[in-house]
Amino acid sequence: MSERITGGLLVAMPEFEPALPQPGATDELIARATAGDRPAFELLVRRTQSLVLRTALHLLGNREDARDATQDVFIRMYNYLPGFNPERPIEPWLYKITLNVCRDMLRKRARWHAGSAAETRPVAVFPRPEARERHELLIRALDTLSERERAAIVLRDFEGVSTEETAQILNIRQVTVRTLISRARIKLKQACDAHVRAEQGDHHDV
Amino acid sequence: MTCDRFRFDIALWVENDLSGWRARRLQRHLRKCPHCQAYAESFRRHQATVKQVAAEPIDDTLAAGLVEAVMARTKSADAQKVQPVRRPRPVSAYRTAAVAAGLALALVAAWLLYPWTLQRPMDVPRPLTATTGNPVEKPGLTHPAVPPVNKPVMVKLLTDDPNVVFVMLSE
Image (cartoon, rainbow over all chains, first blue to last red; front, side, top):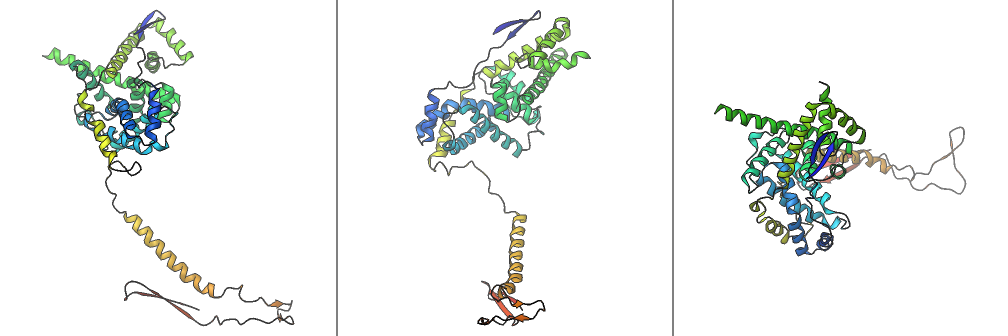
């Protein structure tokens, strides 16, 4: 954490932790996989699966759907890889495919807007119990967001993608991204605060 | 409440997503508003929690066997032939109706155009007419034999079904 003093208010700013694998050998892997090298493709999948899994998990809200979506993402990647320019970074492209696959899955199940917390199955993707509880709370809160808000907040806050890149991935303007993420952050915070207040109320009742 | 308009700015400011003049305006406001300071601090803590959860390692069981499943789906088939699992689409009634309408239109067009093709005006030499309207023949030029066009022509279209035959008559 880095600290910033702003107008007398001490603000600890969380440092950006890149969620993406480091470039370098990945470029070579992409070139080899594009040329039909299956072991290279497998290694590429291994390197990028956590990025796709995590994004799909936050967009879909449960682990089974996230696994199915991740498989579909890599199948699409396999199909479209011959047309991909290996000189470009693969992560924005993968995010785009993941968003498309997840959007298709959610629309097919008519869950994007009609989804409710009750429909979300348990997530349980983190080994540590306290992290699991916080994560499930956030997943339930994410379910209250619109499709665009959810996509923007997942990329920007959960994946640590910059606003500029988020705008490129979602094919919208940066100012629209800022509007979406400000609304989404407020909704997410309100949902989390409401949950904490409800829990505190339960404890008082007991 | 005047502070309400700063809520969206605070939501951006805690992650350095606020532009220059709006950030400066918010900072001026924060210096004199303890309520917004508390809100910003609470927002910062919330964002830190989000980042903390996002940075947690995912359970290994979630990714177990995933790569193998992907490679199995891509192994047997050619790269271009591998498709995500999709349900077969039912034949649309609109599509069937559109094809039938197209066939009917083609049949009517053929029926209308067929006699016209028999009387192609280019085959018939145009008479050299004077102002009186009487045709004037040039010496040395003779008309080729003009096929009789007023004789009705019958066209039969046979189908696979011997009981179904389309008959078209034209003058």
